[in-house]
Image (cartoon, rainbow, N blue to C red; front, side, top):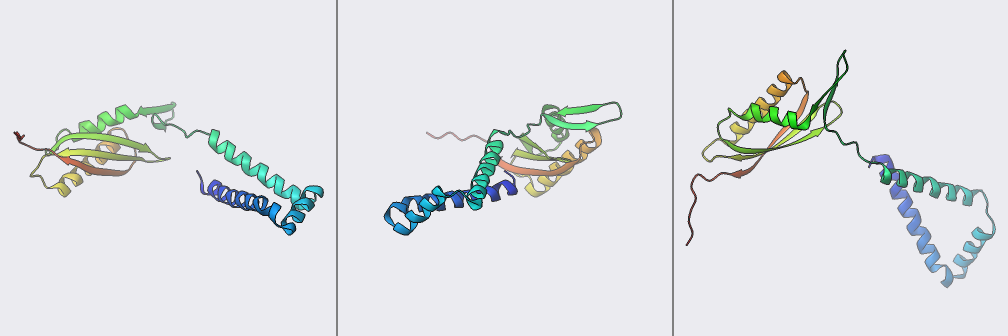
Length: 175
């Protein structure tokens, strides 16, 4: 949700809560009861504005509920000949190819997030023990960014590497 929508939703919730509290206590207090009867019997400008505000906010909320996020299947580029779409699977294959020569990685999982103009990458890595993790991560980040930008000409925003686990070189038997 956008900040604008969140702001109106917050105002709307506050107004609805205040109105609900007012209606809940109206039968018990004669002043509140008189105000409620005055508003119901006399539809003036402020009551119309309030009703219009409620209708508009309900419309905004309904539109945001029904609107779906744009699901991207890859990175789209426009050339002089037309549109070029590189799928997420193709990008993942390119990333795997860029990582195949890096020693210290046993397995990786790749998650992609496309922004308007850049591709952000999260790599969950399973690394072998006895490797310098900060140097390994830096090498992974540089390799992925350099390879994607040179081969696919995809602007890479951020390459996050999360060392998910350290691979054990030996398996122990517990009896």
